[in-house]
Length: 189
Ligand code: CTP
Ligand code: MG
Image (cartoon, rainbow, N blue to C red; front, top):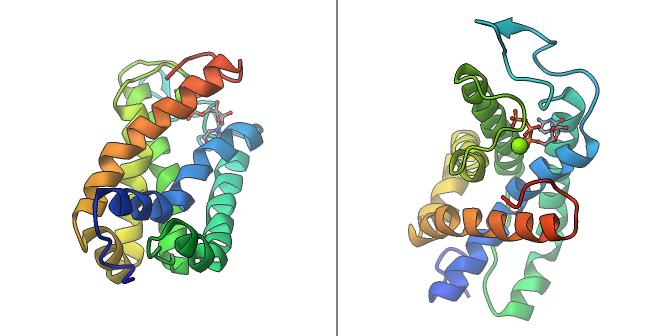
C-alpha cells in the first residue's frame, strides 16, 4: 500500500494521527518535566508577564527531545504497525520531526504570549486556542523545515491535514477528560 495515498476515511485518520505523534507528546512531557527557570526570565510587558511561569526551559527542552525521540521510535515501528492495522504508515524525516515537536511547543508558547497580552493569568483556559495552538505550530514549523515531507504526508491527499485539524482537538479533549476523571488535572479540558 502506498503511504502517500491512504484509501478511505479510517486509513486517512490513522495516517494523520501517526504522522502527528511527534507533535502530541511534547506538551504532555512538558507538564511532567516542567519547572525551574521560566523562558521569559520573569520579565513583564505592560504589567503582565511576557509568557509566565508555565513556560519553562526544562519543560520545553524535554518536550522537544521526547517528540523527536518518539519519531525515531515510530520510524522503526511504522512497517510492523502498518501491517498490523492494514494501513501504509508514513515515516517522519528528522527535520519534520524537529518541526513537529518544536512547533508544538512554540505554538503553546505563542498562545501563552497572547493570553498574557489579554490579561489572562497562568492556567486560564481559552477554549479553541488551547486545543489548536500546538497543532498549528507543529504543522507550520514542519512545513517550513521539510516542505517536501509536509506536502507528501499532509497534502496528498489533503484530507490528511483536514483529519489532523478535526481529530486533534477531539483527541485532546478526550484524553484531558480521562486525565481529569483520574484526578491528574484540575480542568476537564
Ligand atoms: N510547561 C513547561 N514548559 C512549557 C509548557 C508547559 O514547563 N513550554 C509545564 C508548566 O509546568 C505548566 C504545565 O506544563 O504549568 C502546563 O502547561 P500549560 O497548560 O501549557 O501551561 P499553563 O500553566 O496553563 O500556563 P499558560 O496559561 O501560560 O498556558
Ligand atoms: Mg494550561
